[in-house]
Image (tube, rainbow, N blue to C red; front, side, top):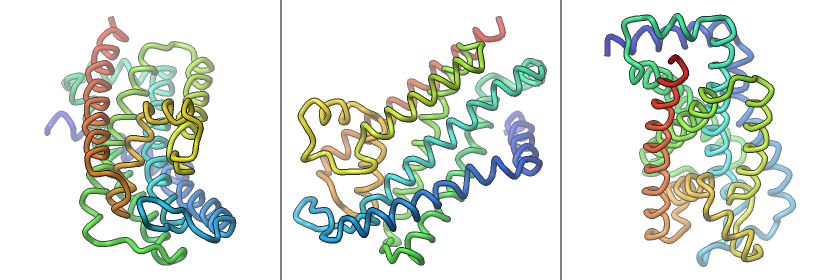
Length: 254
């Protein structure tokens, strides 16, 4: 734990001196929920039929917003590696008496705290402003899913950041990934009525796995067997991301 505290403290100082980062990390997902939720909820007046139930669009989209927030937090944090590398802090930090594991884990621990705070804000906005029912029994699995989801995407993007030297190349990759992974998933719409090819690609997308698990936790919608398979798949994806990010970090300083 001793090696993690300096990393956590530095992340805290960065956020306290950069309010715009906090705005994008905490408030923007809530704005997505309100803008898309209000607009599409009115468009889907009859609701979205799923598993013998009819969900309002706000109920359906809530899990997607939380999944999107985890993705966005991880993407923003991975961009910080470029800032640190450009000003030399990245290499200086790695000379401190902390291990590479502690460096990565300290960063993701702070991101997970932010993700929990952001999730609380999103759930509160959904319940108070949009009238979405959020069962108390859902909170524990949702928070667990948020932590694993944020970690999985952070490690994945960190591995990309460590391997790429050019800032513009990294921005191109993550923006293309953001567009493709967000919209080829179950985040914004159910997949049942989509063409078979699109559906197959969507079910191979880790964003879909994460969103489906969160949606099941919040609404009970989804096959427990499929959700369990998706949860295991995303956990393995996060674990593989950590190993690849750690290996890429070691090579980045050789």
